Length: 150
Image (cartoon, rainbow, N blue to C red; front, side, top):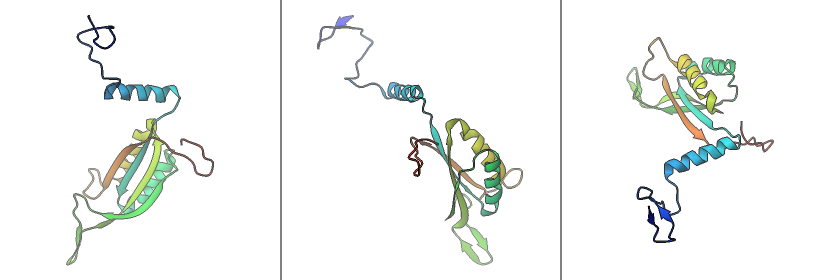
């Protein structure tokens, strides 16, 4: 061990101080532990873009699986499908439905499985069946009660 030039305290050759900061990895671990210690849990926002004709069935199955709170939006867009040709007319943007729901972290996989199973057309699926996107939600409140969480 060598004495520190700053305060004379011993420090090993291997340990390099972060000048008062903790490493990003350690910071994430500290934040996660602090969140867990407070009894809080993570939430996930699931956004899925699906064929309009699958919307009713997906909503019904989500409800049956315990996910009643869903926001539905009419959207248009294109993905790998790159539009469709109807007669002599090329449509670059295709009508779809976007469903959004926020679930507890531990429920994310169940909700995604429901969507993937029900929104797929045919046994192997087809271009245009849609996409599922999942992102973390750090906080949520109910407006009428001011209550935090789900």
